[in-house]
Image (cartoon, rainbow, N blue to C red):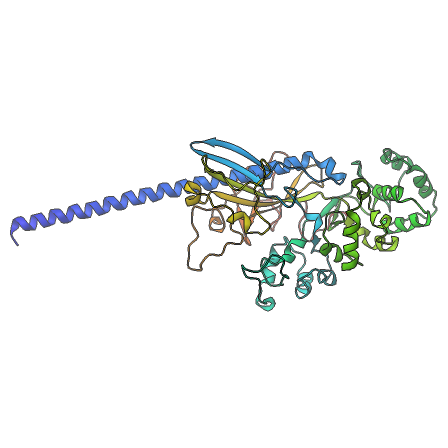
Length: 485
């Protein structure tokens, strides 16, 4: 090769190498920009989702008086937080039937439930002993892990299985999970919002009459009770005493509302007015036919009648003795609610998700995966996966609302190939390395995930240094027994 040809070859080779290096640098810069954009999107989604949780907390807190009287919450289903730069941010609450929240008190609390009671829930016969022996549980989602253990595995449902097919004990998405909780609790407050009197303590008749001032016809019963030489010292004993007085159902119910076995929070209760027959059948002394009769009877009663704990006796479904057995385990209201918050950023020209009705939140179906499968967004939302879903359990048994549980459900139900990498641009378990030293703990799958989100001014979540161990944020830890009946 001539000297000129050699020089030409070297020049061409150098230019080629320079072009490749330049292309690599451009590609690296583009990837860095995309990664930075994805990180900013994740942070923005987390702030949006947390805003939705705070919004639900504030609305539940403002409606606490109505909830204490046994009413349902009325939550805003959807709101737009901003629209700028061609994008808009929308936060929605998933609908559970007619409401944008679902009662945790309508479920059976697995902590403290006997194996024989758990076994009466369809699909739990094989798992009931393991659930009872594994108490305390920090969240019902932990039971997915128990159900998928090799010793408990049986053929589970396939994607083609009808939604009304019988549940299995081993399927992570088994239908029985919707009947269970670890968060149910009630406040020891009368329906008027006054603190209940402890039946075992010495109580003053004047104080009792003052607490029952708004209830007509209760004074004679209170006077008769105060005149007893040997007063009842338990709620079951009070109910038995009422039976000897032939008290009408309404005054008897109001008198039971005035007292409690112990002050503070009444844990692990089931809401008689919202629990389905599956949950009611798992209560002590209950069975499936009796539970069905309760459900049928309550559909014929008005809200005032249903607010009294004695309505099963008034309706002729239970005897006073049967009600006395249930009394420590039941209530007629729900003060702990679960919401599912969906935060989404999408181009202004696109709908952020299918709407069930104007301002009523997304129509996400009933399955856990429905929220992630509905009408996949296009454009930037499709490429970046700009959606985050948070499950939050909000406790308003106290004057200050508490966040009892927070979980990132953005990836719930997704089935990815084992060799596939999770996209860095979508929130979920891939973000579990983004730990910070503040904000509530969020359970993503079963690994806690710390989100950089602001604390509410009314009820600041604990910091990482003094946070309760486990996945719960709020008034008590699993294994502790707050004051209750």
